[in-house]
Image 1 (cartoon, helix red, strand yellow):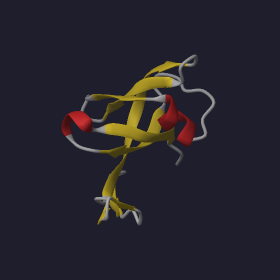
Image 2 (cartoon, helix red, strand yellow; image 1 turned 90 degrees about the vertical axis):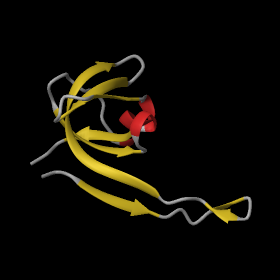
Image 3 (cartoon, helix red, strand yellow; image 1 turned 120 degrees about the horizontal axis):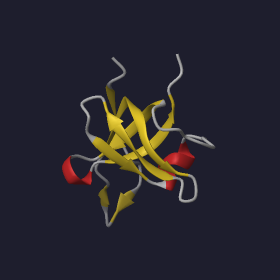
Length: 93
């Protein structure tokens, strides 16, 4: 529920080769921390794993404020230690 993956191919080439496809994972999470000065913070995934987000991810979602405890929709790219939130917005029903 709320989980799904989508692959997106980049059309640009780099050094004569194509860039690898970027896979974004869409999921729900709970806002955990947020600093309005830096517009960065973290979310808790439903399994309890904290995952930070930066100002670019916050701005991509068009939010103005985020309160801890709010349910959010996020898009995540990468795996393991390189996993990062690229989009965060409020979960609407």
